[in-house]
Image 1 (cartoon, rainbow, N blue to C red):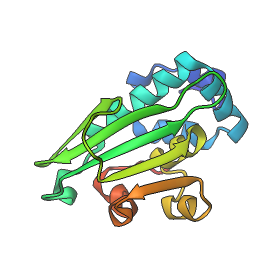
Image 2 (spheres, helix red, strand yellow):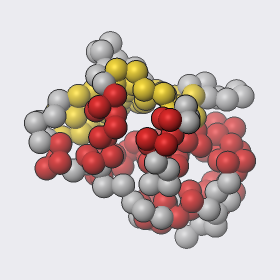
Image 3 (tube, one colour):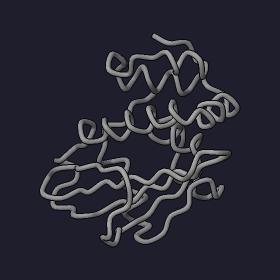
Image 4 (cartoon, rainbow, N blue to C red):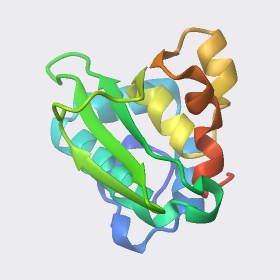
Length: 157
């Protein structure tokens, strides 16, 4: 397993890391180290693609039931890295993820920085606390946003 540094994350073979191991790695990173990851465009893209790539596998269809929703994620960029946009579509017991913005209207849009995003998806941050501290902005269906974590198997570090 990689050490808890940005360099350790850069050398990580994501395919061999379980969600629980990833959560422990993220927990060991400081805000500054996550900022270093965000500044490295290639590493940032790799991390985001891996996290969103796993969402479908971490999805809990039984918990979602008949939910039909398009969730847009905006991970704000910094420095030379632009905002990254992904969409998660939940329908018919499946979760489909795509990079980029579609023309469809999302039911909810979540806007957060790189560090907050990694902490959230690795189970290292409370979404309600993040919202209250304005580190997570929500546009649209706030009730859906507040319950999103129950639709995914989020590891605990």
